[in-house]
Length: 130
Image (tube, rainbow, N blue to C red; front, side, top):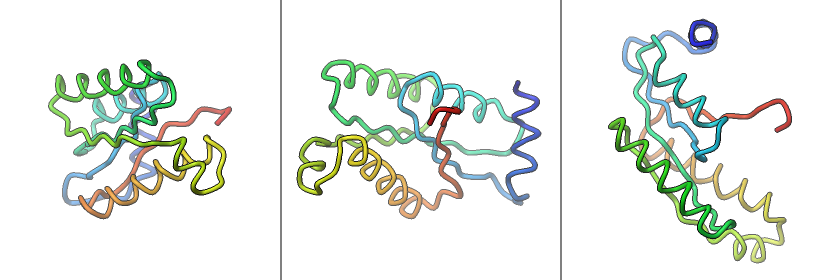
């Protein structure tokens, strides 16, 4: 799997004469953790940072996901950015469903981080049903 992933990245990403700076959106779930591990183990010259949003929609489970991501990042010496979001209030203020509010919150923040820290790319994990 790693070999196929590396080959795909080599075709997908332009050649740089420096390390690529990639911000990886990490929820703590299987899809995003798999993407993170594949990027971390990639043979390409990549510098990773993590972005995690705690939407506070699942009580202690949300906090547990945040802790898991923070701990994983620290154990691998990877910079971790965390946003605490009041998703319910945002949804009400903007007349959005919770799902659309969470989407807006995360993608707006990812774009802000990309510009603020000069990341080359933002990587998000999606599976066939997303």
